Length: 360
Image (cartoon, rainbow, N blue to C red; front, side, top):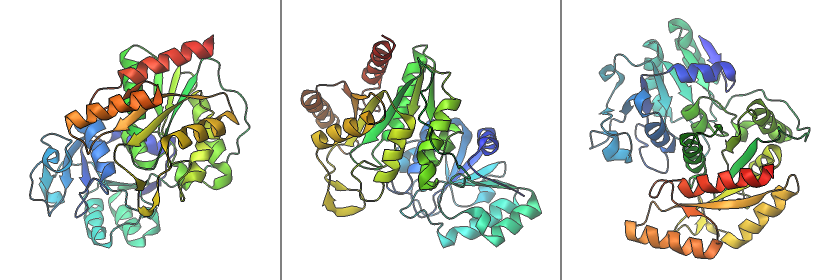
């Protein structure tokens, strides 16, 4: 058994998995299964099944609106050639559902690597460790880390333009906006890389830092280190976390802003959301309040401005979504898109224009 954390060795192992089963059993809702949904969208070719024994549907597309014909299965016996099982949920608190332990033990006995982004670490469970030792399978805790680096605030390579996604709230599409912008830049022949800062982004890309599980004093320094390791690229798209006004997660948001020292920000929001996710008694701050706050806080570290807006219109009809995008263009006077419905070209144009401005 080899226990691994979110370091270069573990990241290499994640990229070796090409027969993945996603585990969402009993938790296959958009709110909880966002890790599985992102895997289905961005590592489609590496996923062979979703383990969900209670679904009335047969395919991932029917259940998650992603993944096409990838089947839903009731048990691991239906996927004899799998090479890993990924925990596909990100519940509040990050705890492992007790009913899943027998499934994970069976996976280990079948010599499947088990990959988890939960706060409950696999390697702290003696029964899972014993099963892994007996089979030679690996327990990979994506959030487990030993990063201990304080930021030094030194400049990054000139020409490495850093664009960071920020938001009105948590869980509204900052990772997706960054991934789609990165892909759009690369399609245009630009040198670009995505820097994951959360468990789902790491599982999708195979490399990153679980910033919400880094000791507070080292948050700025850890993301600074990752940026510096990838600064040979002309564009770095740094995944955002939380919100600067979030009662629970604002500290991580601020650490990313100052550690990554972005040149530009993509502001993200979900149309129709009025309250902080999971805290329904707390109303969201207005867009204009947050735009001002993000630019003010970012500029304490490095010159920075908001270059575009990514709107999540998942709850709207097509016509209502287009109307919301037009309304947002009028309000923000910035490039606006929904990266799923209308593509990321507006943000790609804005990023290229920002780099020309920075170099000038």
